[in-house]
Length: 161
Image (cartoon, rainbow, N blue to C red; front, side):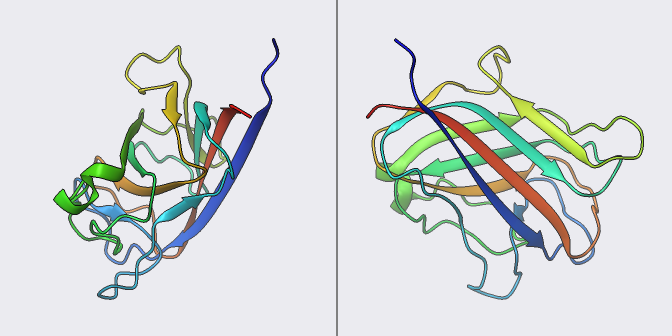
């Protein structure tokens, strides 16, 4: 049986003023309560089989963890703030994490990281039973990718329906 796949791409312009510290949230605003989660609106249950992170800046080598929830999380969402996910209030909706290896690039192009089931540390495949996923992207290494740069995360899932 061939399963139908669906890819959802979410893009944010990271504020990233003065760079990130280890385990900081990556979002579009560092204003108190102004950051938002990453919404992956699949519309049906499935299982993630591939994840791609793409940053427009060349020569980035940071790693990243994407925390995923079945409803909008209450954990810290503001850019450049210390991660709190998964907060106690979010545990019932916590689906799991996707662990991205260090970004890389070849030449002068953008930086990227790819996770598939063959990467045993990435936590794929990752099943989800609700129609949508809500993420918090957390950088694992202190780095300054530049102010107002674009990070894109794409998730590909095999759909159950």
